[in-house]
Length: 485
Image 1 (cartoon, rainbow, N blue to C red):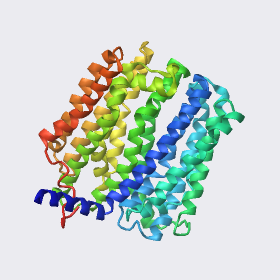
Image 2: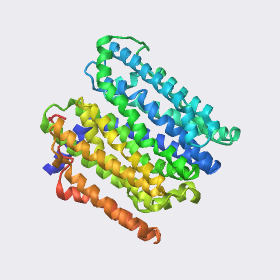
Image 3: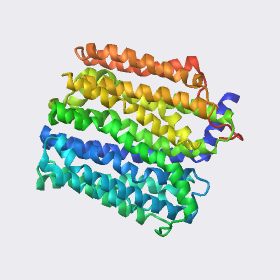
Image 4: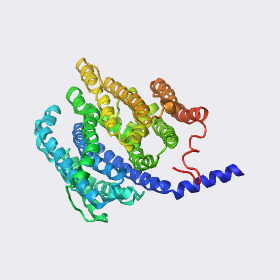
């Protein structure tokens, strides 16, 4: 009875802390947003040719990393800095936001012709140049919704994420009736950006001001430049593979690769955004090493279990999933899909360590991790130059995630004094899950649906079982009645 009371009391404390409500809001919003994005991709895949879908993925590649740089560093600084709730600091963050957005827009304009040349479509230069409007518009976003997240108020951020997706998804079919090729994707991307821009100002509770307070701007720059530079490195290390695939293997193969990645990465984008919004303020408030270690081990174990659970179907029968969703013409090699799924699970595993480092002021770790991930690019170039196919690309993606994960653990031990052994139970889960899944994926594609379903359930249960044996009660220390978070 006492155990039940204790569990109930802890659950009450968890709810009253605000984190459960915040995580629920963010999870629902992110999940709904990616369901809408997923539906939109299905519609586009059914209406457009493989070549047009490949070109559309190049547009998404060109903008994904650059729009991140236009807002990541000032927004994170607003959340973690003790002075982030002040209006003066917010105005200085707007100034830094504009500098980042203008820089991203300029770089995209400069890169327009080379990107079109890599894609073997020189006529697309003007289309790539139009994409510069996206980071330029993002430069004028109101960052007040980041300030609200300091107090775990996530409704504005959730609306900012969800409403543009609803709008562009509703307009997808009418726009396809007007533009029958890749131009439809370009129009949808621009519409989504300007809807989101308007929402940040509509939900702001403070006036939009810009100031150049030197002390605040200096602090934002000192903390933000590694994240800003790291975002560009991340863009090169995670997205440059798509233009390379287009150049060596053609836009048709790029379409298959990008659609496979859209399904595999969907759980990460949902959980990553939610996890960042929850873990960053939580880790920032943890003061003593004992609390930090408990929070970190809980987060690593929870995220590893979650990642392996949602990625198990893709690890084993990803080809069937993609064929069912997008059609047989977009199916990638089954083993390649399994390699990408294992790489995404490693991203779940190392995510908490990266957030903890940022929360404690070590923003350079993110830059170094992305540089290690960039080691995959030379390997991909050499492999494709020697005649290898898409499997070599997926292998190097997996290898780069392993390098980044190992670095994060050693960096965490050195900078925060969190020992590597705290992450070993989750690491063991991940290794066992990946090896079994990779060994079974090829054979399961030839078996029936019953055996595939049974194997998926079995693989998904491995991580929580191992964690139960190696680190029982992994969740019990996260929130205690009367205790600190």
